[in-house]
Amino acid sequence: MEPILSKQEIADLLRTLQKDGAVYPGPEPARAQEIISAHVEINLLELPADSQKKLDIPNFNLIIDRFRSSFGRSLSHYLQKRVSFEIIDFHQLPFSAYLPDQDPHKITGLLSLKPLSSGCLLNYDSHLWFLVLEKLLGGFSGAASNPSDRSPTRLELSLLKASMELACRAIEQAFIPILQVRSRVIDTASEERVHSFASSDALMAIYRFQAVIEEDAGVLELVFPIDSLVPHRSSLEKLTQLQKFENKNWPENIRKGLTATPVTVIAQTCSIDLSIQQILDLSVGDILPIPHDPDSSVEILVEGVPKFSGLPGQQNHNKNVKILNAYQ
Image 1 (cartoon, helix red, strand yellow):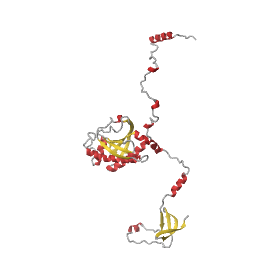
Image 2 (cartoon, helix red, strand yellow):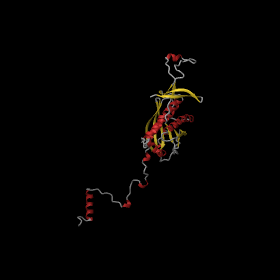
Image 3 (tube, helix red, strand yellow):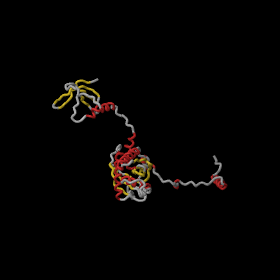
Image 4 (cartoon, one colour):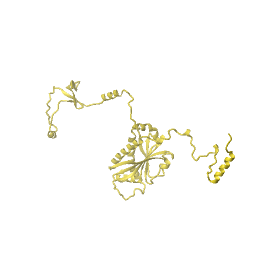
């Protein structure tokens, strides 16, 4: 079949249409080797299969909630004031992006978390550390010194470190469901000394809390490197999983467990009735009459319920009770 238009005729027609404004010229097609993309080249074969999963640490909010509750109780006892912590927000940032967003007068505690691969950061903003000191030293709200206009002194840092040790105990309690963690305060600093805590591209899990002490409030921050939590993802996932009875012998296991449960057994000779006034009048040396024949049987009670009758006696110089009858 002969073409309707030749290549030259098609080219002439396109030039005419472009000249008249009917079509707009497009970019010349590039050869395959000349194609340039504005996007960064990605080798799909080199991408880790779980690169997105590492951003998600399931159920870690349960650990954080246990920390919040435990630290609130211990700090309340320490300050003898009502203390509560409520989560403000949670976000993830590379360490390099987290560092510039700093309160110049906050204090940072570097906490160890053995056996995790890395510790964590505990931050008191300038309002919180001042408030903790104020309550600890018996001050009052509205003190003349502005909590945001200075850094704590060396003595104040020493006092604040004690409250951070309480946070370490709270972290240990929070991790109990998944891991036995040992935590302590490695260092406290009012100036920025945490640049070597993690690599600049390390992803950080940042939890911020509103710390309310009576009627005043400050902000507490807890920062974890996510890479240190990833190895324990499976343990965290199990926190909310229902355990299935895969063993068909579970009824027998329950029966064995019940039979090994300790109970209280009492050999009772008799019971007497006294008025409240008679009990109030009792004193050392008083004698209570017991309507019981020494040669008669006694009741054997199991958890307060009569189950047997028995006869008291003695064998090998040890007192005992011989069971005579079992009640229905």
